[in-house]
Image (cartoon, rainbow, N blue to C red; front, side, top):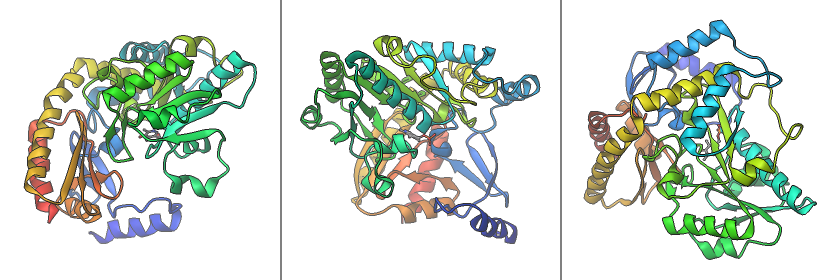
Length: 397
Ligand SMILES: *Cc1c(COP(=O)(O)O)cnc(C)c1O
């Protein structure tokens, strides 16, 4: 590492609140599948900034659209309409099959809105507050007080109790554990269609379709958090589309802005018609013309590039390669996920592998201590997968 990069890191450690144990790299620029640090070293990016850069780094059309909007209009507030938000909402509805869109600035904020909408729906129906929410163990929904309340990792929650009340945790893919936590006060079940931070755990078809049926029978709203697994990552625009069901409320973020901070929660049917109304919820920046230019252009480019079809070509290729690797190593205990959202579980922590991969020019991340997570830009090619596998094999030790 150069003296210059070292100084930058020391300075950062003096100035930034230490809420992350960061890898000792200062990135400077990106191009397609590649990242370059301030010393000019190249890295193959198989992380895409936590599944954000679906289009790869520096997509020309996206950048030009953003630059054009900067010179035109950056912000108006939600007291007025703006054209990019109208276009983005229309494209998002078409991509998801949902009815109404509320734009946020982040994923956690989308989860906050989803929880409020569910509480309001039950409040309008029953005429009183005090409704409960069922969430899953090992889930991740964000770091704000509300989203943390439904995040299934006790260590994240404990220092901040009391969080919002009435949350019960069930076991993902265990229908009985969900059923036993339902009461006449339950207003929503929130889950990731494919758990990301918790270690790449997809919902089983039986579990998710049964949850959908129970929610219909008992007038409980199903909230699917697809902030990580949505936007084409699993080989359909939203992962729930693989299961043939629809949520009542959907959260989306990460790849939706491909680097511009933006999220959304989307409502369908009765949840759209009987929940949040004027005065119930708001945001200053949410849905501003700049962020929505990103969303509209990203969705346009998904279509133009046939990105979801592409994921369905490269995803199975990655699956084959990871299965082959798992077959040769006794320390790999499981391989999960599909599309370009996959994980390899080891019988030991993977921190050292990540460090060696970085030394060798590959950006990978973990999902929990023992799971290597593969979240490349969705434009990744077979050749990129081959290069990744070569570096990974060298880094395993
Ligand atoms: C990242 C993530 C969030 C939180 O999004 P932020 O933009 O970091 O607030 C919520 N849910 C899931 C599934 C995520 O992966």
